[in-house]
Amino acid sequence: MCKIGIVLNNRDFEHDIYALVKAFYPQAEIRCMEENQNPEGETLLLYVMQSDTGFSLCLKEAGEDGYRKSAGQSNHGEEIALISCQDIREQRKQRKDQIKTLLYQILKEKENRELPWGTLTGIRPAKLVMGMLEKGMKNTEIAAHMREHYLVSPKKTALSITIANREKEILKEINYENGYSLYVGIPFCPSICLYCSFSSNPLSRWEKRVDEYLDALTKEIREVSKMTKRKTLDTIYIGGGTPTTLNPRQIRRLLSCIEENFPTETVREYTVEAGRPDSITEEKLKALKEFPVTRISVNPQTMNQSTLDLIGRKHTVEQTKEAYWLARKCGFDNINMDLIVGLPGEDKEMVKHTLDEIRLLGPDSLTVHSLAVKRAARLNMFREQYQELTFENTQEIMDMTMEYAYEMGMGPYYLYRQKNMKGNFENVGYAAVDKAGIYNILIMEEKQPIIALGAGGSSKLVYDGGQRIERVENVKDIKNYMERIDEMIARKEAGIQWQ
Image 1 (cartoon, rainbow, N blue to C red):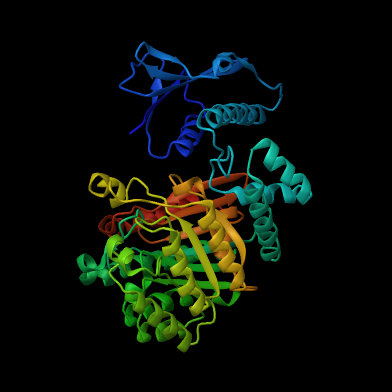
Image 2 (image 1 turned 60 degrees about the horizontal axis):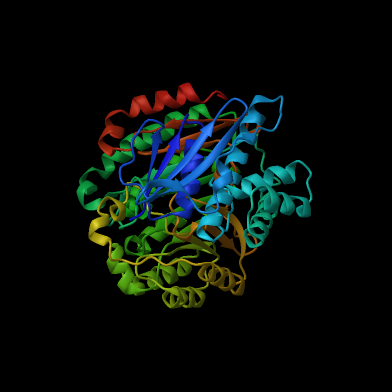
């Protein structure tokens, strides 16, 4: 495995530098070092030296005679003068962009390849484009800026501009200043997938305490409803975990509490992420239909049984189909399905098989995720056990998913990116006309507050038109959440300043 050391004389932009290097070398072991630290077998050393007047970058490779400058990089050790700017925040942003641009050019030259998203390492490219649209820039001007300033490929530039324009149209009637969305988390799953890093816990361990969890959650619902009386509730999203691990009685208990305490008559979208097909029954779907739920998810991730078995999904392809048709039978006319591209062992033909099966079902929206293995996932924590697995994601595969979505009458409506995504690609949501997930757009665009309830809930409070964003966190551990529910409520009382 390649080992890379990033040598810094200060920690400014450490995260951005690390993320860009990781994008070029996804399998490498990378560490950030102080100037006086000794190498520990690194094959590459990247020096990023900053001063008050400028910065310099230099890449050195290990050889028999020690470290030497990488071929063709001899000029990159010279200090680059900073762009003059009076605004301190803007000056800092310009310095960061200059460093990332030069670093990208160095690594592009060394590896003889480009990244689809250029120097962008953040998770919200469409938000960047949306900001330019709101400033009155034309699509052509935005495209030129994305390509020239951030070195984004023409294909990804077009994708981000298309999505930002659709998002703007979808959100045009949302009152950002006076509105908010509600997230309710159910942290239980039938089993834990190999790649999962969410706040999920096996239902088998907690089944006897689910009602105790709902005691705490419904208390939080009642108390938080009092804090939000002056705002308009736009969307509700019940996620997890897997919300349909709750039995029909528990589903009714939860949704009744929400309806009794929040003004669901103002809600534009009410989503329940039913998720795992092996948790969906007709009784549960009928329980959901008793409430103003407008959108659900039935998430296969893949339609290849061998992959489902490998990643620990514990359900069959047939169960996915049965759950989907059962939801249609129960009257749901807005069904989303999630897929993951880059799952272990899956090549283009296996992804094509999944898409063929999904096309036969005909969901109303399709979310295509590029696999991102986070630190908390078992696939990463126990990577030595899985080191022989292959992970494939290419632009050709991503293009194929888009072609299938278009064939099914869907267009892209939101996207986001994550750390350590296979192929340095993105997650894209596709939807038919009037079937786009409003909550998904709102949480990515950070246009309005998202109040998150339940274990692991992370509320995002948006102030000053998005210029200031503060988070209020609930503890992830279920036992802690139940025992400390009064503290979780008090945190929100202190954080929500628009009561």
